[in-house]
Image 1 (tube, one colour):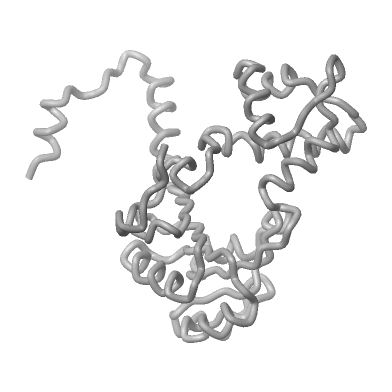
Image 2 (tube, rainbow, N blue to C red):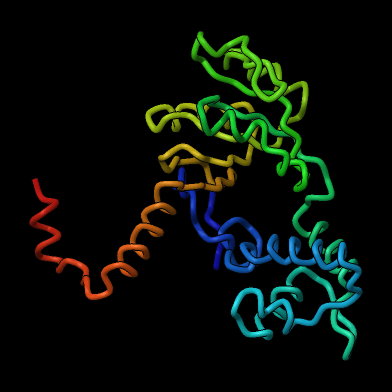
Length: 245
């Protein structure tokens, strides 16, 4: 798949990983961090080797797919022994870049932003949060998770001082696009978007959308199907009638 040209202009986030200028399929990228978690547990348990079949059993996929994933990472196993747990874990860390420190800022200190600012798991994946921002006068100057909440007028100074690589956006839907554009104007090329809105960005900016509402809707659908297995989706005509006007 050909990467988008800068002439294509803004795009919405969520395109496949192959459009982000590298050949790794998105489903592989989704599995790789989970491989890392499994390997960390195995290493802690003292297990020296793991087979592709063992890793495949965690995902319910064919072990051939696991071997393809690992070949894309650039790691090789040993015949009959499998993969070195420690060696593969290090290869994944190098591949993901989590053995390097990435500095980040967070914009939007509501309930979700406050929780993320205090989440210890960020550092496990090489992310160091250095500042949090909110334009609510009631929040500015308060301390959340060890950080003093700054106004967004301080963004240029912080971005310059800490060479920020990633911005975490947790603002309301109406503010998401404007905040993204302000962040991008400061040279940040990676956005982790928790706002309930997709944002348009230039082709050289990567956005990862975390849609909590979508996840909840999918779970709700499965719960409904379990409780009411005979329920069928509404026909297109009835859906159109219900949503028109």
